[in-house]
Image 1 (tube, rainbow, N blue to C red):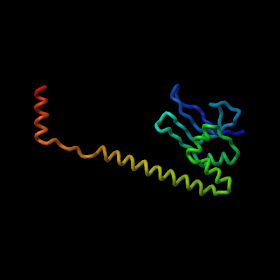
Image 2 (image 1 turned 90 degrees about the horizontal axis):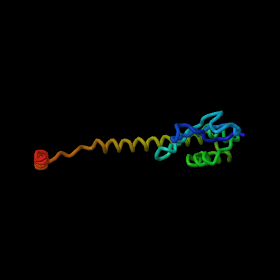
Image 3 (image 1 turned 135 degrees about the vertical axis):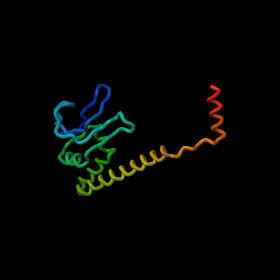
Image 4 (image 1 turned 90 degrees about the vertical axis):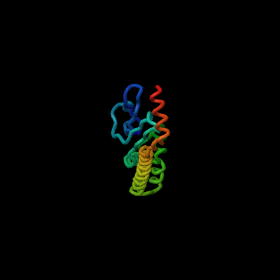
Length: 142
């Protein structure tokens, strides 16, 4: 039986995982068929990236997923798309939907970064001459 599961990577006490397709008889970190994504629980928020087209392919071929991978696939919307695919949906339209969602997410991320940069580059107000004199007097007194 083919399973979609996590393969542990990273140093000791610093785990990150690859989402792999493997034979259920092979060990956790052993031989695998294909890597379809990764999961890093140590970032805030946790980083999850899965190749939706490959995940849908393997699910359609009868691959089973583990509980943790099911949670990741559900959070990305892949299991909902797979259910629509089983009902007769077109694979190309589902993949186009995924691409549109990723594009929107990138645009939102770029806007957030642009706002942060604009906030960092905001003009600094200069001190009035009276305030400048006070700071000079304090500096001299020290």
